[in-house]
Image (cartoon, rainbow, N blue to C red; front, side):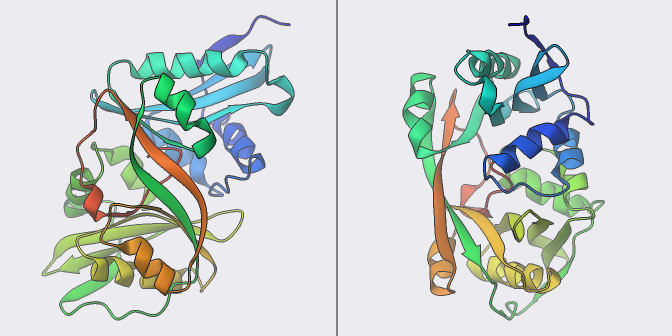
Length: 279
């Protein structure tokens, strides 16, 4: 076998790794690659045999104290040769002593525990159609503005670390983003992105359940009433129970796991995770 080489993926190589994720049934967004790359241009690694990528991983550093592992995939015809472990080790080495997060499927939890990760909470995939919901008194739902300083500050207070470059791309087209305002102050926001099947909503951050459900209804209307998918942690305002009552169906489960401690942020305001790939 050709000696493998490891390097950061160029922007035009990242879509292949996302295509592999689609092949695994992960239902990524149709235009994820540019925004993902903006999060950390050096954070997507590929292991190559000659000119062909054999395995890949995202090891995105959100500043000096927090990072996230995702998109950990080895090409199916090359599995069992130790290539996946090489790219895993490279991703972990890149993030070093940061607090590192990942979203692991149940079958892999024990493996991640052996690597020093511990479960913080569980996340469930919900799928369905958003019911019409009247915003609470005093709340306005408006298009999200990537240049709004209040939006950046809100995201930095809820997510474990600032991510300005990613956020600017994530709330811009072709995605659809809305924010909730009370007296001009941001009290929540959400983004919808078109996927192979339906639309994924993430993040959905909100001060209250009522603010979050109003944002969900606005995003549902903006996406034409198509099926919505959300990855919902068991930490945010009883949102999962609300979705159950609204007729959403539960899908697969993942566990948010951390190594080197637990990061900051505000899980109580996290009604839906941004992405399972980047946290």
